[in-house]
Length: 397
Image (tube, rainbow, N blue to C red; front, side, top):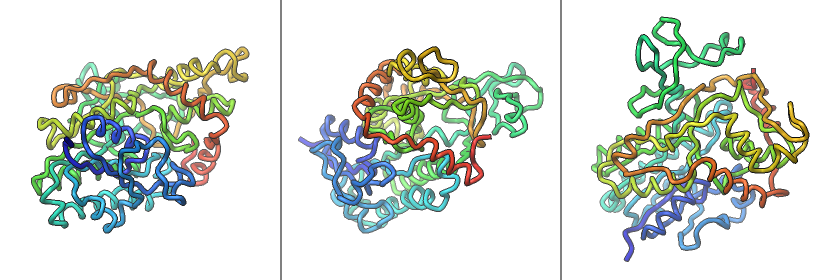
């Protein structure tokens, strides 16, 4: 017997498709609304066909979240809503401002407008879960020996131009600060148009949910990786970018010194946490971090992927390599980049009973196995993205 009907916007995308599978496994009927964004899905948008990896048991509708009629139709008979639809890419959002705000903020607003102004939908809908992002934090949390937990703002350009990557206490004591796990109570500091749009998603869904008595949860994703990422999209996750470069026989590019700390969470763990959030009343009205709780440096990510792909020993020469490839540590920076940000997942543990199942070492092996199957199908567009950013006065310094 079905647990209810679920609509997943953006359900044909990388993360959304995993959520669809987890919902189906958990006993829900699933409908997907997705516009098949060409930057992600290539020519599929022209054919109207769902990607091969989308679960066959899911009902697929090609449609845009900015299209009120399409959204209302997709919401008909739905008990639960997952809003995953979004245009991804932090750097690109800074020069494609209107399109990002239109698809992300206006798209999210359109979905909510359909929910609250369609009587049959509003009366039936039991819960909403929305995808937020770690990008809304900006810099992570730090600890100063004198002032305790502090929240530095963006590093000054003059500091970065001098190659001084680490942060100092914002309280004026001049001490270096040590990164610590970022909890949900940290003041938000979105530093990109993409991040602003994700904050909009979170705040709009939680506000409308509270106003109309529809339990709602916002899940703040950290760096998500896994199979199905668009390897030819130069604005996708860093793991996919590194893999596409390695496939092209080029060293993965690492900004600054590569010691930046992040948290990489496998897409299957994200999907499982989404279903936990749906089924946990404790989560209602909350914003919740989703990561593994185990930070890793960007340099370690690059080295792990090189090792798993065998490029550290058998690939073409990279900088400093001895017959094998090594990460291309650029020693340069991109305006707006943060230094360290990784999550405190105590709230996810307490409210969802969540723990990550997949370590980065395990997930990297699985990712690389899939990436090898994509050889010959992937176009490395990193250099193209760098030219676009430079033309928009956002290139690396």
